[in-house]
Image 1 (cartoon, one colour):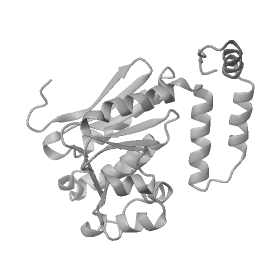
Image 2 (tube, helix red, strand yellow):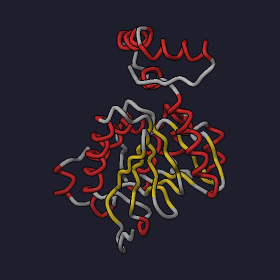
Image 3 (tube, helix red, strand yellow):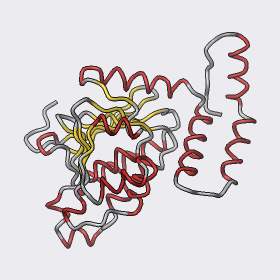
Image 4 (cartoon, one colour):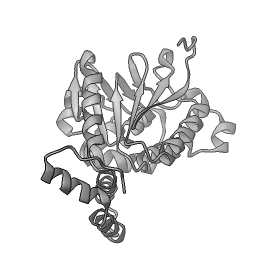
Length: 259
């Protein structure tokens, strides 16, 4: 399908238990307009409401993953005044999804695209990619939510290099920092993403989603143990646990239903 010279809004594709969100402005490195961010929020709400889904993949078209917010719109006072936290709320909605998320980094990651990539649970990158955050060079103080994610994913010193120095981080460095889960040649990207999605879908949904939430809370310094204990108890009483134990005893693959 042709997108035209300027590309188009993000597209959501559902395939069984997997959802894929694709950024579609390749001519401009998949920069995000305000309308695109609103579209993304609506699509993330749709994914969150579909309990049959087990994993979400976020990716881009063309040679880059995402160039972040359209700078021409960032400088419009009337646009900023209508919703100054639009990008922050979009990244937060992605990070808050119950199901696990995978960033399929098909190329360079810039500006707010960094936040979207870090808001995902896993990141698979291609050789030759680079990640760069030019906020300081623009006079922009990045949103605190994105800074918290950067510290949690990269560590404090690497986050300072990224945000304060605007130092580009290549794929090898991102892999060393643990930001990337794999770095592969472009021709192997889909196979690597498919394998990770299959592994995530093989787990019991209550356990996978519950532990994702607890791990994120621990990483971000959330200390309230009550919801964590509730997730443990819910899994302990679940039909999925009984099914998992029965499958081990029978030496067969489990059929989890998320209850």
